[in-house]
Amino acid sequence: MRLHILGANSAIPTSDRFSSCQCIDIGGDLSMIDCGEGAQINFTKYKLKRNKLNQIFISHLHGDHIYGLPGILSSFNLSNREKPLSIFGPVGIAPFIAAVMKYSYLDLRFELKVVEIQGEGGRIFENDRMSVFSFPLLHRVPTYGYRFTKKISKPKLDKAQVERYQLTVAQIKAVIEGEDVNLADGTIIKNEAITLSPVAPKSYAYCSDTIYHEAVIPHVQGVDLLYHEATYMDDMSVQAAERYHSTTIQAATIAQRADAKRLVIGHFSSRYKDVEPLVIEARTVFEATELADQGAVFEI
Ligand SMILES: [Zn+2]
Image (cartoon, rainbow, N blue to C red):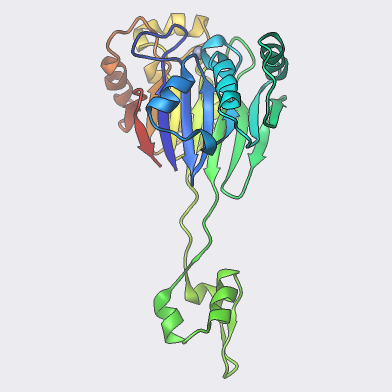
């Protein structure tokens, strides 16, 4: 599982800091998370493959999270995309995309599935590699966070045991399918005695944009990596609350209370020319904090 940061600035992009956009690569299946202006430029710049992008998850319908969508859809069409694409987002995402297509004469040649998330969210997507849960954040408009969980890999063969019992090809196939083995002498070898335990499922959660909102804690409990917006430093906590955003200390507090393993902060206000002080402040509460630097890659 690998997270690519394509943009992490708040409302107004700067010349070197684009609006919110990330891509998570789960076993070669790419999902985009938010799609701010310029998303496709950095998607190409950081050498991500268009034909591997299968899903886009939108947190909310503010421009700094969706204005990259028209460009991406148009470019996919011009490059003769054939693979289907799914877009998830709050209610309103479907008419927004429909209006873009209608008034810019965008006649898609690939299948586009748009899913509007309702109410409390929940499990919204699943394939053989991952499952995705959505949960409400608290912002000025309906906003969802997302938790991506990579599925547990199948148990791996313990080669030493395979040799010890001299298993046949047919028996090995059965073991991979989860079956026990019946040896010629009638002994039954349990599947777990011939396989190595699968690795625990890894997970990543995305929380942007939101006021400090403790109701998200159970949804991000124990994640390997948590992204939480930190638009402002702590001395701006009053303004942060008024604008339904969070501070560095609040993002770090959520990570600490949720027992996250690592935290990455982003959605920086363009008032900060240097964002290093934001991560320094967050680390006073949660040591394992990193900046969502554009182009950064996080292995999960
Ligand atoms: Zn925003």
